[in-house]
Image 1 (cartoon, rainbow, N blue to C red):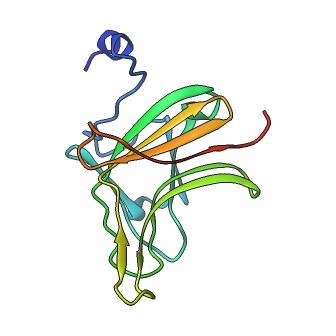
Image 2: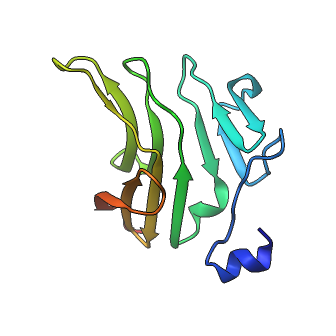
Image 3: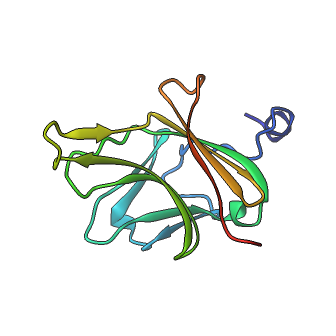
Length: 146
């Protein structure tokens, strides 16, 4: 999709992960190239001893945006999580996570095929969808004061 078409549709950026290297707008922590693979239209983040974080740096200063993420991750081990985290500081954050809870009588696997995050200044609203068309609200929160 061309840049003019992205702006016309309201999209600022779309990542197809067609290249094996990440655009400079992305940051991965820890920066361990063995923990992620890009290319062929997807990005694979791999488990490890420490959590792996992927940041899209231009969103930090953007006060209003909608971010849609198509997700094919399904946790298969207790303690493994995937999703989106909005982090301001240790007291101000929002987690939209997938997880497997085997402590329940019937193990619970919670997954979101699509995740939508809407930022409107300090207000963040999260949604999930099975198809990327019909959205269900997860919740909303105000984070930080700046």
